[in-house]
Image (tube, rainbow, N blue to C red; front, side, top):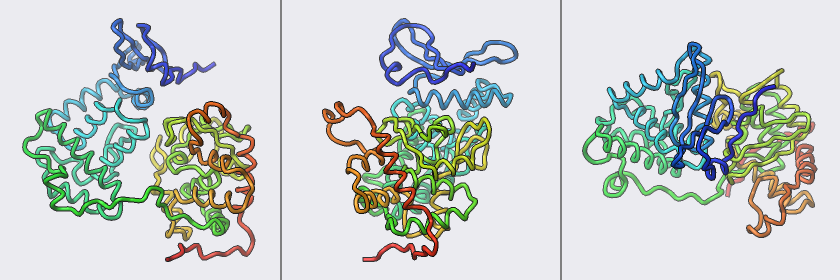
Length: 412
């Protein structure tokens, strides 16, 4: 029988005081010292010897990601300890932006909300890694990824920011702040001098217009009456992005929840998908009832003994990106709309076309309902009722003969 993994909960991590090594599973241990300080360790066999790799202080989710990366390297015949030493030596020899950003994220991992937040930092700063631990050629900072931090100037920072400053203001603002923090840390470590070229006040504010403020929830949503026609077009596509988009529409889930879905979270026999808390916006585990149509999509992708990501990417051990899902929507004729907007399409349909209570529709969207007292008395998640609602939505979304609609956003 396989040993249980992921034994350590976030609460246990916060409250445990008993000194010793506490197993999370698969070689990952939480080490508590007699003084109460905590660190993580990954233990593996190398050349027939038990070897311990210290991971430092970080949250439970981040520790599992780091251990998973180390475990994969061991399976590939790479000693993760030696590789880390080599990476550190290289970073010290040539302090590139990529190395500094990677070091900053590793140092501040415990301050991030969850693993999803860590992934967002890595993506925007172009320090996502492949199975070999090399930086992927993706993200917004590719132009400065290999630049020495002591040579990065205002012009290079502007070259990164300008392409998204007006079109994606919220992302651009966060990106600027992250670049500023990385360069500040590099200065403290003695890898650069002078003013920070990514500073806003008294510097970039004189060169860039003030970022536009977005209205919260402003996502162009396809009218629900057009969704069946879109589903028909998507069903004709064999692409992974189209399959993920169909699954997203049928489950009314967020794109990050869908592209990160793993086979270990899904029970095909019970038709339930358990999305872990670290991938949910509200930070709470969420059970999703799967309709027959959603299960059919999964079974078409499932193989015997399947593990890892459901909607897998081209590189081994990766999943497709949100951009892949967006591209599938555009290819099917929905370029006027956003992927996130399908949650609004579902909500509008539930409110206008069904008699299901509002709280059931909101629960289907994993929205937090009521105040703390009300939630304390209502501990269930209404799975059975939500299943009926989602079955009705799936029936509505089913492509119908001669259902050809323009799928164009209404203009004011």
